[in-house]
Image (cartoon, rainbow, N blue to C red; front, side, top):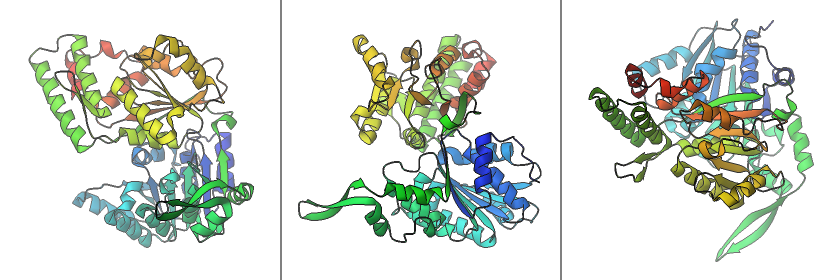
Amino acid sequence: MYKFKTEPYEHQKVALEKSWQRSFYALFMEMGTGKTKVTIDTMGMLFQQGEIEAALIIAPKGVYANWHAKEIPQHMSEDVRVDSLLWEPKTTQKFQKRLIQVARGSGDALRILIMNVEALSTKRGNQVAQDFLKLNADSFVVVDESTTIKNRQAQRTKNIIALGKQAKYKRILTGSPVTKNPMDLFSQCAFLNKSMLNYDSYYAFQGRYAVVQQRKFGARSFQQITGYRNLQELNCKLEKHSHRVLKEDCLDLPDKIYMQRQVALTEEQAKAYKQMQEFALAMLDQGELSTTQSVLTQIMRLQEITCGHLRTDDGEIQPLASNRMDEMLEAIGEMIGKVIIWASYVYDIEEIEKTLAEKFGEESVVTFYGATPQDQRDGIVAQFQDKDSPVRFFVANPRTGGYGLTLTAATNVVYYNNSYDLEIRLQSEDRAHRMTQEHHVLYVDLVSPKTVDEKIIKALKGKIDIAQKVLGEEARAWLV
């Protein structure tokens, strides 16, 4: 009898009962409804039944480390011994030794290799995954946020589909399986099983479910999708091998759901961060950071670097190569409905607006910050609140938009970065979570590991007023 470490919600029990014994299955569960826990319990149950000996988990960069550090330790039954390894992009003797240990481990432990999906684009990453599955014939392969393999022509998609053929059990997890059009489903389902859609050929699949017209661009001729058809039939095929869960249907979820997505610093950011850190510590040692505000200024300058820009001494903004915008797009790609995006810096707000307008259309995004004309602010809020409006994204500074506004059209909130001010965080959370909110609200924090991002989040979670904790030796702890 499988003993849960954390008791599942009712909707998770339903998903588990429907799926755990299926050799291939899709969990179309909206972000925040707990598809990771369902998958972990499935692995535990199959291992206890002697059905699997190992698991390969493939997830985006922003979440794959959470499987190893948080999700598996938190949810896997204490009756299941786990030996897990997190993929490392750089080859080291230590990693290679652990990889061999995990791949060839004893039968009394469930062996789990956790890789970021980008690694499957590389020859080394693909080879490691292949070798792991060859050594473990009874395997369970998971693709988390499976829309990352929607592009059938991408090398990682081809590699992951090939890996799926070696697995005994397979799962895809996503909150939004169709990000642009129903054609996105083809490669996700191809990973699970070609019988799921009954089409080996993408073009045959496209011919059945898409309306295609021949177009010309100069001398070049190409086919363009202009619409879709037979979608009810397609939906019936999916329903046989999938389970759908929306936040609004989960009556037992907490009112507020919190998640984090990790954003690795680029080499350029890491170099700038270290230099700024050393500069701030030198100022502290020289007694130049003697006030709370002076220390907070240095913390904010470090945070600016994690966000992808550096303010020079003359006040100019210097962009830095960053992964943060891409991680934000990955996160909202998993979300359904309207989204609030809080950002503390004007540079970030303007860059987010530009990026979203390019990807989703200019009508999809509005901004609300210091430069927003006073006579336009009520209209912007009304546009966002209107369920029939094309406006999906509300990008704002929490100091400007975090007080008094009602933004309950959104059930998803992204913190591109966080203010150190606890009151601002609490007030900004409550813009979506107010009396008229009828659904659960998901809050996603973008966090760069081992930076001030982590320290700020930890303090905010602990309801700590950071401004009272940054002088003297406390300041050193914040800056190192």
